[in-house]
Image (tube, rainbow, N blue to C red; front, side):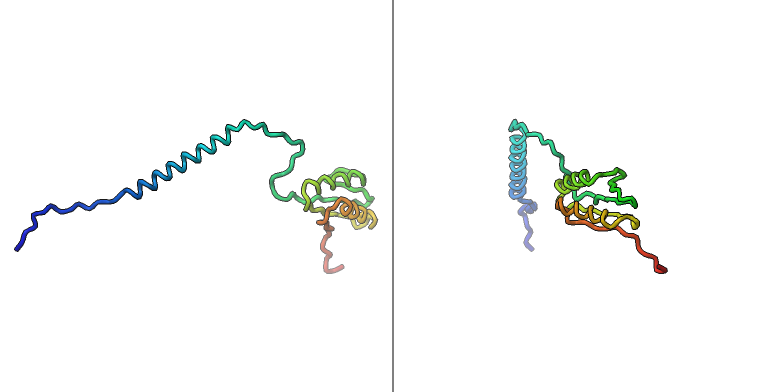
Length: 139
Protein backbone atom coordinates (compact mmCIF):
# COMPACT_ATOMS: atom_id res chain seq x y z
CA UNK A 1 0.00 0.00 0.00
CA UNK A 2 1.54 3.26 -1.10
CA UNK A 3 1.75 6.10 1.43
CA UNK A 4 1.60 9.76 0.39
CA UNK A 5 4.52 11.63 1.70
CA UNK A 6 3.90 14.94 -0.17
CA UNK A 7 2.42 17.76 1.92
CA UNK A 8 -1.23 18.56 1.32
CA UNK A 9 -2.01 21.69 -0.68
CA UNK A 10 -3.75 24.39 1.33
CA UNK A 11 -6.81 25.87 -0.34
CA UNK A 12 -6.28 29.50 -1.39
CA UNK A 13 -8.48 32.31 -2.58
CA UNK A 14 -7.39 34.49 -5.46
CA UNK A 15 -7.99 38.11 -4.31
CA UNK A 16 -6.63 39.82 -7.42
CA UNK A 17 -10.01 40.59 -9.00
CA UNK A 18 -11.49 41.79 -5.69
CA UNK A 19 -8.53 44.13 -5.16
CA UNK A 20 -8.99 45.48 -8.70
CA UNK A 21 -12.63 46.29 -7.98
CA UNK A 22 -11.77 47.98 -4.67
CA UNK A 23 -9.08 50.07 -6.35
CA UNK A 24 -11.49 51.13 -9.11
CA UNK A 25 -14.07 52.18 -6.51
CA UNK A 26 -11.46 54.21 -4.63
CA UNK A 27 -10.42 55.95 -7.84
CA UNK A 28 -14.05 56.63 -8.78
CA UNK A 29 -14.85 58.25 -5.43
CA UNK A 30 -11.63 60.28 -5.44
CA UNK A 31 -12.39 61.66 -8.91
CA UNK A 32 -16.04 62.33 -7.95
CA UNK A 33 -14.94 64.25 -4.87
CA UNK A 34 -12.56 66.30 -6.98
CA UNK A 35 -15.38 67.31 -9.36
CA UNK A 36 -17.63 68.34 -6.48
CA UNK A 37 -14.79 70.39 -5.02
CA UNK A 38 -14.21 72.21 -8.31
CA UNK A 39 -17.93 72.95 -8.64
CA UNK A 40 -18.01 74.62 -5.23
CA UNK A 41 -14.91 76.70 -5.93
CA UNK A 42 -16.08 78.37 -9.13
CA UNK A 43 -16.67 81.72 -7.39
CA UNK A 44 -19.80 82.50 -9.35
CA UNK A 45 -21.97 85.29 -7.98
CA UNK A 46 -25.54 84.04 -8.47
CA UNK A 47 -28.11 86.66 -9.48
CA UNK A 48 -31.09 87.42 -7.27
CA UNK A 49 -34.70 87.38 -8.41
CA UNK A 50 -37.52 89.57 -7.20
CA UNK A 51 -40.41 87.21 -7.91
CA UNK A 52 -40.90 84.12 -5.81
CA UNK A 53 -42.50 81.08 -7.36
CA UNK A 54 -43.51 78.00 -5.46
CA UNK A 55 -41.36 74.95 -6.07
CA UNK A 56 -44.11 72.61 -5.07
CA UNK A 57 -47.12 71.42 -7.01
CA UNK A 58 -50.34 73.17 -7.79
CA UNK A 59 -51.83 75.33 -5.00
CA UNK A 60 -55.37 75.07 -3.70
CA UNK A 61 -58.12 76.57 -5.76
CA UNK A 62 -59.13 80.18 -5.24
CA UNK A 63 -62.64 80.38 -3.80
CA UNK A 64 -64.56 83.45 -4.98
CA UNK A 65 -67.73 84.10 -2.96
CA UNK A 66 -70.59 86.20 -4.34
CA UNK A 67 -72.98 87.04 -1.50
CA UNK A 68 -76.70 87.83 -1.73
CA UNK A 69 -75.97 91.55 -2.19
CA UNK A 70 -73.61 90.88 -5.12
CA UNK A 71 -70.39 91.64 -3.23
CA UNK A 72 -67.39 89.61 -4.34
CA UNK A 73 -65.18 88.24 -1.58
CA UNK A 74 -61.98 86.21 -1.60
CA UNK A 75 -60.73 84.95 1.77
CA UNK A 76 -63.19 87.25 3.54
CA UNK A 77 -61.94 90.40 1.80
CA UNK A 78 -64.29 92.49 -0.37
CA UNK A 79 -62.92 92.96 -3.88
CA UNK A 80 -63.83 95.29 -6.69
CA UNK A 81 -63.95 93.88 -10.23
CA UNK A 82 -60.54 95.45 -10.95
CA UNK A 83 -58.90 94.06 -7.81
CA UNK A 84 -60.40 90.62 -8.55
CA UNK A 85 -58.94 90.79 -12.06
CA UNK A 86 -55.49 91.69 -10.65
CA UNK A 87 -55.65 88.85 -8.10
CA UNK A 88 -56.71 86.24 -10.65
CA UNK A 89 -54.19 87.42 -13.23
CA UNK A 90 -51.36 87.17 -10.70
CA UNK A 91 -52.52 83.68 -9.67
CA UNK A 92 -52.68 82.52 -13.30
CA UNK A 93 -49.24 84.00 -13.99
CA UNK A 94 -47.74 82.09 -11.03
CA UNK A 95 -49.65 78.88 -11.79
CA UNK A 96 -50.97 78.51 -15.37
CA UNK A 97 -53.41 75.77 -14.32
CA UNK A 98 -54.83 77.70 -11.35
CA UNK A 99 -58.32 76.51 -10.37
CA UNK A 100 -61.11 78.88 -9.33
CA UNK A 101 -64.31 77.89 -7.53
CA UNK A 102 -67.18 80.38 -7.67
CA UNK A 103 -69.64 80.17 -4.78
CA UNK A 104 -72.64 82.29 -5.68
CA UNK A 105 -75.42 82.81 -3.17
CA UNK A 106 -78.71 81.43 -4.51
CA UNK A 107 -80.36 84.78 -3.83
CA UNK A 108 -77.84 86.93 -5.74
CA UNK A 109 -78.31 88.14 -9.28
CA UNK A 110 -77.12 85.76 -11.96
CA UNK A 111 -75.21 88.62 -13.60
CA UNK A 112 -72.89 88.93 -10.59
CA UNK A 113 -71.78 85.30 -10.96
CA UNK A 114 -71.38 85.70 -14.72
CA UNK A 115 -69.19 88.77 -14.16
CA UNK A 116 -66.81 86.61 -12.11
CA UNK A 117 -66.85 83.96 -14.87
CA UNK A 118 -66.07 86.67 -17.41
CA UNK A 119 -63.16 87.96 -15.33
CA UNK A 120 -61.71 84.42 -15.11
CA UNK A 121 -61.98 84.04 -18.87
CA UNK A 122 -60.37 87.45 -19.53
CA UNK A 123 -57.27 86.64 -17.46
CA UNK A 124 -56.94 83.17 -19.02
CA UNK A 125 -58.06 80.89 -16.19
CA UNK A 126 -59.59 77.79 -17.75
CA UNK A 127 -60.22 75.65 -14.67
CA UNK A 128 -63.38 77.32 -13.31
CA UNK A 129 -66.15 75.54 -11.45
CA UNK A 130 -69.30 76.50 -9.57
CA UNK A 131 -69.93 75.21 -6.07
CA UNK A 132 -73.38 73.97 -5.18
CA UNK A 133 -75.15 72.20 -2.38
CA UNK A 134 -76.94 68.93 -3.18
CA UNK A 135 -80.68 69.32 -3.29
CA UNK A 136 -82.65 67.21 -0.85
CA UNK A 137 -84.86 64.52 -2.41
CA UNK A 138 -88.04 66.03 -0.95
CA UNK A 139 -87.63 69.26 -2.98
